[in-house]
Amino acid sequence: MSSSDTAKQVTKKILDVAGTAVEVVECPNGLTAMTFAVTNQLYEALMDRETPAAVKMTDVQLLAAVGGMEPGSQFRDFPVTNVSWFDAAELANKMSEVEGLEPAYLLERDENGNITAAEIIEGSNGWRLPTVEEWQELAAAGENYKYPGSDDPDTVAWHSGNSGNEIHTVGELKPNAWGLYDTAGNCWEWTNSTSE
Image 1 (spheres, rainbow, N blue to C red):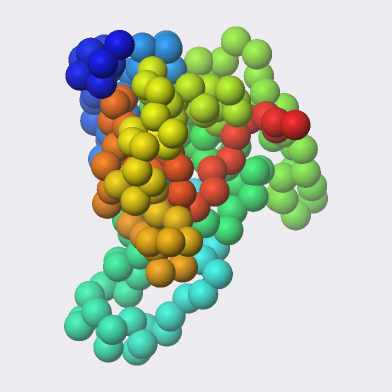
Image 2 (image 1 turned 60 degrees about the vertical axis):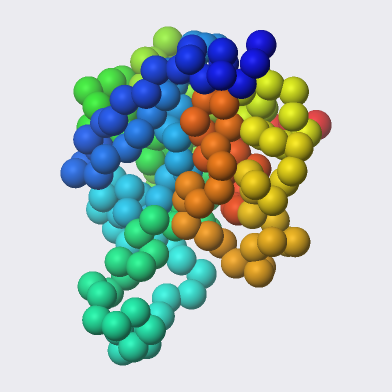
């Protein structure tokens, strides 16, 4: 199947998730996926808290660096990092609730409100993390490239050879045939299972 044939089988739509536009695709394999990694903007909107960035600039440093932008706004389109698997499961539940879907995870919390355990709710129609196998299928998008969307990693993935050892905003490079960006490189993604 050619790249153009595969892309034609994808249905794109825009969701309004807590005031943030989120583009999703309904893929030929039956899964619905966000076209971009979860951004700091989406995380903060859904979780009602700041992202746990490894390094936060002071407002003075930020304003000097970006010439008067709203504090934190230059990070809004970066993928969220430094979150636990529990944070990712909680985010999926929050997306489900906003969309009127059944949460996919049963989350157990301690007396301080910290998540201590999670289990998948079978039969839920809500958002969840893909399994490793689903992630691999979403990344390949029905094509047979060495990297998701290309044999040239520089066109589809930020890696040690082209990133300057920095995380980049989502969607700067070419997507795969299903319109999914950053399925290789840039930062790690959580899945719903582990692979040996």
